[in-house]
Length: 272
Image (cartoon, rainbow, N blue to C red; front, side, top):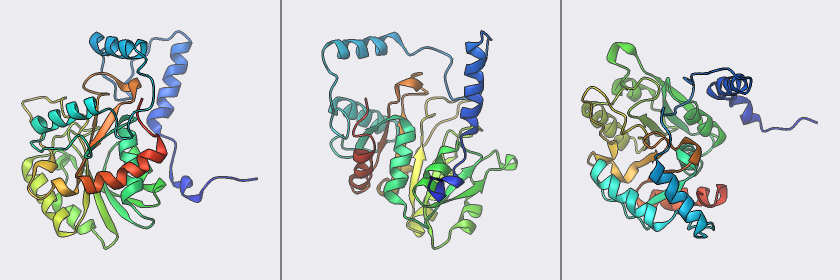
């Protein structure tokens, strides 16, 4: 008997993970491998983070948390965002701790996209955005990033790709894999389009602390009129080398979080 939803035929196995599995096989055979396929810093998780986790386990802090995550962590996240983004988020109901940024993306698309909807996704980009959109029953429409303009998103090109089915737009800044940091001017133009066409924006900002050449990260949520329609996705994998810990988060206005948390509740209950 054949099983499998038809939509899964549009979801290829991650090429990144194919290479990763091959690399791990070589390591098991004793080969020395330099990993360039996965987004992982080249240092260990800092010792004070590991000690805090050990202390929590030994203290018996091993049970369910709120679906939103522990209030202590949500408060710390909100404090960080007030400095990094310049927007205030209520830790009680505008922040969700997720199983990595990947779950935050998946839950957002499950909650905000219906079958037949379209979401604009930069190309190239991490495969999960398109895959999550397809699994939500929607279609990922690829917005090409071109070397000729430094791999920034082109608002004019985005405008031409918006249709009556378009519901959302993905921004990744700093961008994976090009490293491009979107300029304020580009973000302002995209913000104008999002407001004109009533689009939500998923802003993946997990590389916001990995910056070079004096570049400065600006969140589109900081632009006037965008807080109410932007879902910020971030986490601790990159800045703190905690890829295996699977701790991420999303922050958004309460009406967005209210619906996204329903998907999170039934997906993973709560982060570890």
